[in-house]
Length: 192
Image (cartoon, rainbow, N blue to C red):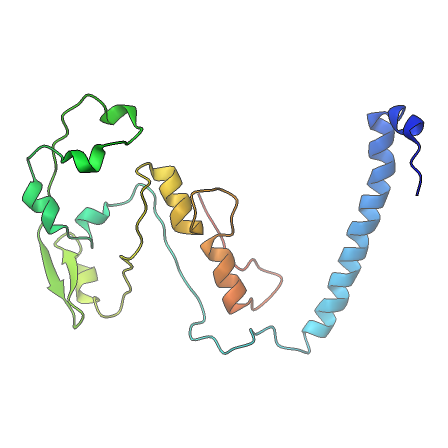
């Protein structure tokens, strides 16, 4: 296959866009027709995953700026012991945040009391009395850990499993695993 370099060097942007637009439009139209063909056969076949799901839906709420985990479900007895004392250097050493440099940081213990609730002994703060009554009916994940101390990369890590942006999110994987009941609605929604 030969390529005409002289033609390529004299091709201006307007000509390129007008000629490539026809090709892109044709590709989009063929994809649209293919989708309609698949939709008619998809109505005959169920869009269920290859294994029976144990759940139908997942509601995941990540409210950046919400109550601190330290005041809701994440009791830290060591933090309570260190309350009012200087922060150990092992926590702040090597952190590249300007606000932490050159200041004496004082540890702040919990601002409320915690109690164990339910058969599993979920520790819930006094700030959440209604959640405490539902301790056996809710799932609190406390197994995730990251070295990120800034909120944005930590949120990216929580939603994708890595601090690198652009990876598939939790919603993508849940939709992949559970399937979608309809192609007319999105499998998951993110509001920010």
